[in-house]
Length: 284
Image 1 (cartoon, rainbow, N blue to C red):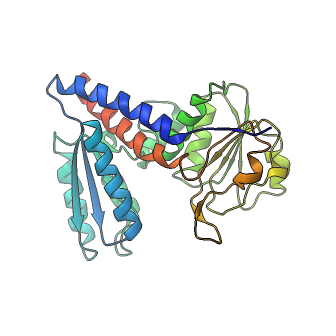
Image 2 (spheres, helix red, strand yellow):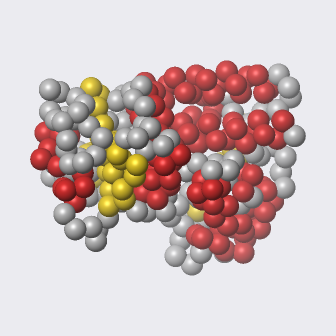
Image 3 (cartoon, rainbow, N blue to C red):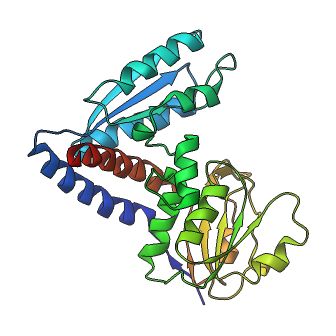
């Protein structure tokens, strides 16, 4: 059996079409969803990510503002800029690209963003809303994983999901989102004993640790759904995930590739969150 590929590019394209349609409807009411992206420093990967986010906004009809600052920008100046954007009615979402220079407290900066504009879903208020099942913004990468799972048509209710990884931006929120979909969730991490024993019981596996070949074919139950959040490089320098894709796809029922799986969804869910932020303002 060879797994069916969950095409992140196709799912993202469909969602972006819906975003463009809803954005056009909002514009008809005089509101253009606006996203402000702040980049501090010259991190090459951050520049690429920021460029993709701004381009995606423009293609979907959203208003985007990219603010670039030198790496020596003071923490106080960055906090002041975030506060000004909090007060700007034309901006519905604020994203401060991480990592920030070492002299700036990233947690303090994230917490300075208004929860109503926290479209990255990193604010403590957003995390709390997810935990309690109240309205907020879901962190973009795990939210994208949920959309990929939904695209398979598989009902997550009662399914056993194993999340490998416990980071604040993927592992923990992923587990909470799966719980909201009524899955039974196990979180595994670096201190887990006998990871294979857990993954072999899983109907759904989300690998999010940032280490290639974390999940191999002998660790997967036949027919399981495998979501690979990892972004690594193999010995040839090619992009790969946390999953041994070539072999796991011969066991799994569904699997995401890297690239072309979770990656396109992260930026897409940022657009969705920004649009929803604007829609909430429009609804009063």
